[in-house]
Image 1: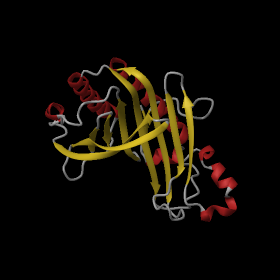
Image 2 (image 1 turned 135 degrees about the vertical axis):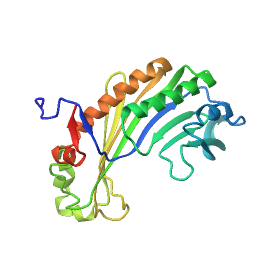
Image 3 (image 1 turned 45 degrees about the vertical axis):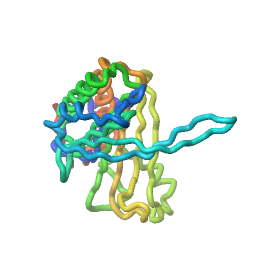
Image 4 (image 1 turned 90 degrees about the horizontal axis):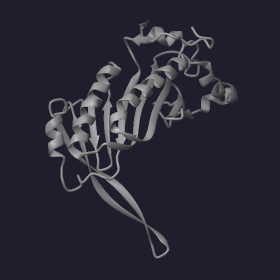
Length: 260
């Protein structure tokens, strides 16, 4: 343990509460896929993502004309590549301005980042993109406990993350529908948006179930493709560090954690 009581060693878990793990890259200039479907990209990734669904985005563009802001709406294609036609656990979303790789069942960072690397390498080569306007990595943990007081997270969640809600609204807790907080952290070379709290899977109803969200989103701007994998590792290390600070031994036991 370090001086704040948080584990210094890396913990590997047999179970997790992750519902979404997401890598997103934004790029500028925009891709010309509005009129040209990404058939070559599809061919390169079809082994792991054989199923394609074509959707549309409702987009808005603001221009300045005759001393007025003019907002124009238009529809843009969104190509969704899935590993399964029925219940996909890995998905790619490709639009004219971003690429998203998302896992709904997460086993390890090694597996995830290998998939991300393969997809980004193919994408960058085909579209000759060597720099991203934004790179992000996001981990969403939706912690659901089947029994107990929905406001009592003793030995599960760091008390600092729940005390403000419990103390300030102690006499009014039965009326709470949702209690989410956000902290934005700047680590010089990248930032993290940390959202946490009683998200309530039955919202807008009042809280009756024991649900807690830990949502970590690391990102940086204007990054070269060759540096992106180093930053994904940095993001993962920071997210892992913050996650360990956010939880207590009871939750580690629930996830069957083991020191590496």
